[in-house]
View (cartoon, rainbow, N blue to C red):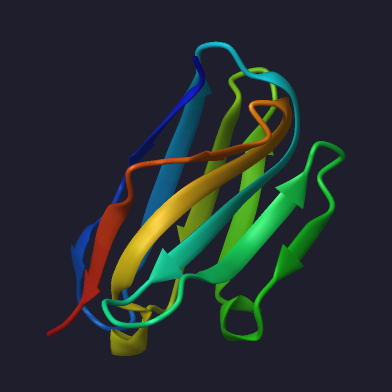
Length: 116
């Protein structure tokens, strides 16, 4: 069974940086899309960024120019470099993988808190 393990969250001051990592392991066939979402309590989960197996990327407007998504296909790992963090970036960040099987896999989430 496939599994995603996220790491890299934590507390950071406004203007700071964090790098999130998500490693996929187990039985996952033909990953074609890896992405990061975030969720604030009481709000809907929203897409932050995603990257295809061909390394085409998409960013939410709030992430453009500040966040960079990348992946290491050999390691089945996706990264999210977050720079110039703002208090409104505070959320739980979730890794997501779209594959042939299982079709939709989620990580357990990692908390990011931006506060002075």
